[in-house]
Amino acid sequence: MQLPLQTFSTLVTNAAAAVQGAASQLLDLTVGSTLRAILEANASMALWLQWLILQVLRTTRAATSEGADLDSWMADYAFTRLPASPAAGQATFSRFVAVAPAIIPAGSRIRTADASQTFAVLADAANPAWLASESGFQMASGVSSLSVPIQAVAAGAAGNVQAGAISLLATALPGIDTVSNTAPLTGGVDAETDTSLRTRFQNYLASLSRATLVAIQSAVASVQLGLSFIVQENINPDGSSRPGHFLVVVDDGTGAPAPTLLTNIATAVEAVRPIGTSFAVLAPTLLLAAISLSVTSDGTVAHTALTALVASAITTYVDGLAIGAGLPYSRVTQVAFAASPAITNVTAVLVNGGVADLAPGSIGVIRATSVVVS
Image (tube, rainbow, N blue to C red; front, side, top):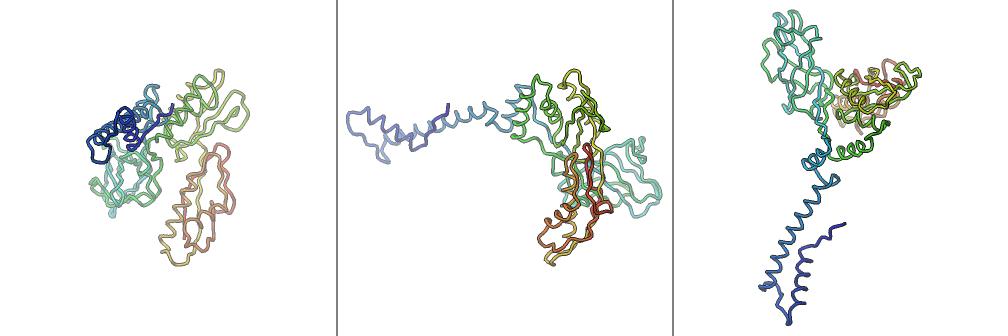
């Protein structure tokens, strides 16, 4: 039932009509009169009570609840908001004189040039430079630079910085002079929005007790934000037919999701898969794209700034391609033109050294390995 709301003027008018109707003589309800002041005070109280009722109604429905109220509502169904994810990538530490060994401890902090984003060095036992006894990476004598894995300290999309954005050493590192990131950092995603949480909850309810495609998709989407995925039925990873077997191909934006993420997704899918079926959770086949091109402009924008703008636009487009989506050769030129109205021509476009489209296959994904704009 829709709650009939009343304004302050309506409340005062209705109250005045009720009082006058019950009186045997004409009452003084002019502005400034005692009786009118009493009616206006009561109308103010009624407005406050009306607001309280609206607040109660708002917080008792998922469709209108927000923030912590929506989380509380969802908690009754053991359904939680997906948290933010930190951006990750590689940082290159360098030095001017490579004489003595230097150590880059895990946990060392670095920052962007404006100090707005902070990143920490991650441990990586698979890296040949990792030295377990020092809990860090060793830059040996004669080695002037070393790339190590890093992750944003604060989770969220703000950590997805462009190449070259990191340049400050927040932790003193003896023997290390500079730091930079030659590639953009990716994977940072903000916490799930209220709208997204409501939509996912609807899909969750629709998938309960059903071994369906929607149930599989809902299970995968509930593991982590920022995932793109496809589900292919009755097929093997090599493309051959296999009745009763399905593939879940997942990408977190990097083209190479971590094994722990794939394991978590497999656990979620196992809980809802149809009986008598088998499945595999796979990372997409990664197809790297090296792109080069030349641009000319009308001179209203500095050429250095223009090339950086074009490179960023192309990188964003390529890294946003979905699983199975191809990279049309002509699309690169279109994205370059769209990067700035100052561009008058785009020439010498090469994709992996050629002038042909890239096709990753049905379970492949294309990511930019380098974009060189001259």
